[in-house]
Image (cartoon, rainbow, N blue to C red; front, side):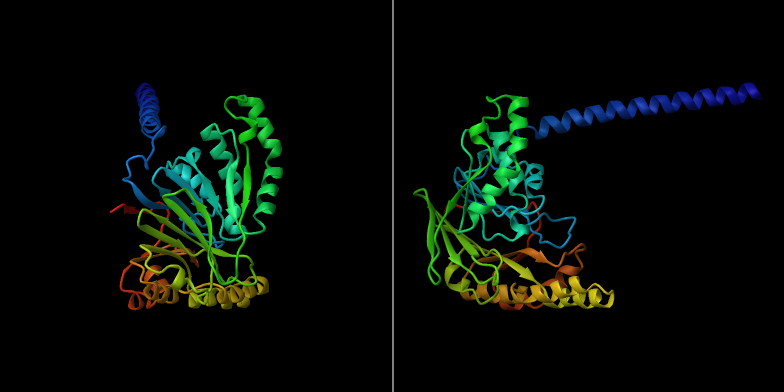
Length: 346
């Protein structure tokens, strides 16, 4: 009997060893396949000439495991830009295999932390992937210089380590960090902030008080156009700025859902959270209001991003939208990270 038990034990041990070895072989095979498929991949290389937007962050400051902070990756022909760089957006873009080394610039809508707290990592990854000899241009209204110079200072030690480790040929010191590109704003008029001939980027002031300055951006390329609201309340005049746009990307906050959090926080004796949830309701735009703006602008499509509050399950989407679809005759989409919107040149 003891011999039988010993034999069974040896057999089980052998099976376990074989299984573990098999798992390792399978794992090694999968790693090899995944690495070969992903390293060097460029998902935008096959895009037709046109204006394209990939969602690299559709979330907000409220925790949402499925969404990075606000971030849009814009492709216009052979030029690439990022609008805002929220939390985890750089890693999200890397996961989406977007070529950060090709970035021509970043546009910031305003300087709330959730729109800039991924910028340091974005500047680092662009430098590391692109072998750049000049820093990343970061466009924004007055105040952008404080953000960029502050991040440059915060990352200065790190930059020195990386050049020392990898060498100046791989990480040229002159390519580290960012350089601010400041533009002036007029209160009631638009400002051209970038023009490469075929692509024009225009900024317009929006009302996100007490946050000042705050802007929306419009990209026009070969007859196609997108508008990105940034954070704005519904009285910002975006109907005129977004007139005839192919796609309006607009922030959205459901006040009833946020008010539920406000009441719950108050009941839980969390006065700070309750007050913040109350305050944020008056300087954002509801899905219904965004739908009315898109309809008045004659936009062909509306994409809601900077989603407040988080939508951890799909069942919440209908509640979040409310009656928005009744106020807009075009295509209406709740953004999710990884979505791609393409506008080929006609």
